[in-house]
Length: 211
Ligand code: XMP
Image 1 (cartoon, protein in one colour):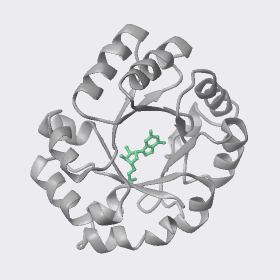
Image 2: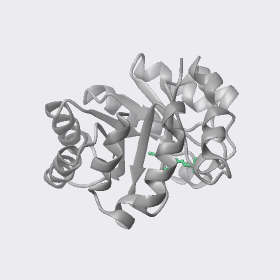
Image 3: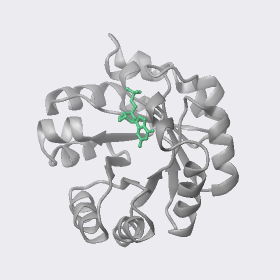
Image 4: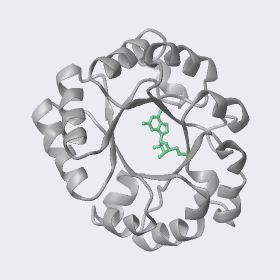
């Protein structure tokens, strides 16, 4: 079974609550990041917790260890259950996020290779493998890897074993749900659900991955 994680990148609390209300029976987790938190405040995390789903903070944290720790503490105090961090900042910065996450009973995921075309300018083959190995070394719970490049996901799976792969890029970015779902643990989908005329139906259309 592959989980479906809704990337809720709408800009207001009202829109976020409306889409979550419509889609929550068909999804396994919600991911929010700068678009919604800058638009509505960090307290939106508490409002979304009413849906009783894991809530992941996608801030792609990328700072020195002390600042990463301060950011991660805010995230878990706000009610999130997981955090996404960049890995290129190195082992001490990644460990700071992992330590705070695990102390709070939460999870930490490390970005390896991003899903958009420009990701290959700096983060492609070789670098992504090193970032995946760093995620293992730092005892992170998993990685973020691109649904737009299934062959790269397979290569990164070799490195991380049974740790989780969360994968964005299906739908608006062109990735295929059918192709990527068997390779990953959680498929992250945003625009093709929340921009749909009928978000519940759009979320439900991915239910085949959850069986
Ligand atoms: P869409 O609308 O393209 O949304 O379905 C995808 C969501 O995932 C985020 N995203 C990424 N996050 N590494 C990440 O950590 C990535 O490679 C990546 N690609 C997309 C994006 O911000 C949106 O929330």
